[in-house]
Length: 133
Image (spheres, rainbow, N blue to C red):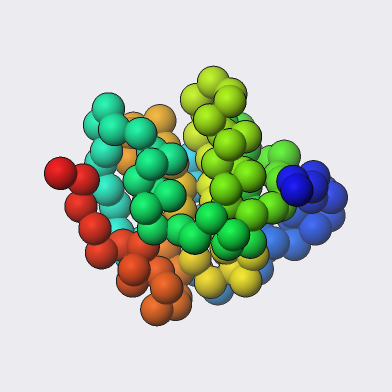
């Protein structure tokens, strides 16, 4: 089940993430301003959702922010990765930020066909240790 996240809660999540992970959400393309990204992956024409599905458990609780070329506040939705992935698959491409509900990892999908991973957890190492072949 996917639920819309209230604007105040969404802002609170971004504030927490900004402080803990040093991401500057004041910028339209916050992914360009990540102070400590763990990994960047150019994926070209490959399916982003397939790449993410190979690393994120389908039942992982996540928050999806629609960051599409606009500054915050961004619409956000909470739910299991599988449900959010289905939502993404059924809409035109847009930039997004996917955050683990525990706020210890994040991934941006950018208009440059690049995934930008960050966070401070051992699970993040699993997310980052792969290549697109």
